[in-house]
Image 1 (cartoon, rainbow, N blue to C red):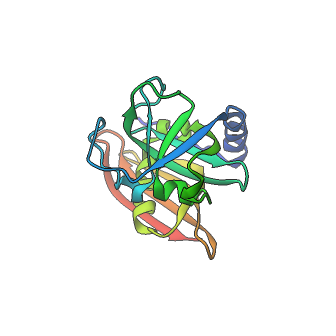
Image 2: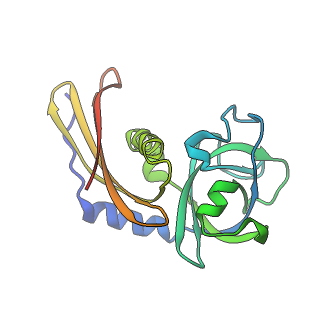
Length: 197
């Protein structure tokens, strides 16, 4: 039988605070993207919230990275879609839209950034699944942060996971709650729901 889990905000916050202490200082450049390259993922993936990393980087194709502009505290979550041969491991080549979402003018060329992997979503695949749904459903918003709320088992063959996503555009900041119900044996989605809070 599938075990019951419940992780409240205090647990998540302690975990998130630990992750934030592991920020890597680096630089971001930008690109308009182009053809599908090394990762076979288009630059348009995730509403162009995409990045190329160095071949010397530890990040892999499809992995998500949280990038922060320390000058204004803006953050974006980008997906690795390409690699750059022999670039410094601390340099990210963001799609222009992700670069601008950090509040940077492309004429700057190079931006000082902080970044880190998004392990809370890498390890919890349904949170990453809902992240993709929300980024598609809110194309003019950037996901600034996310919180794992809870995991419950309403029936023997059903698991429900709930996440809160903080979204922002130039006019407002909103919170969207995403819920997914799935069969843990088959790993198939039974239903999912997103609602503004």
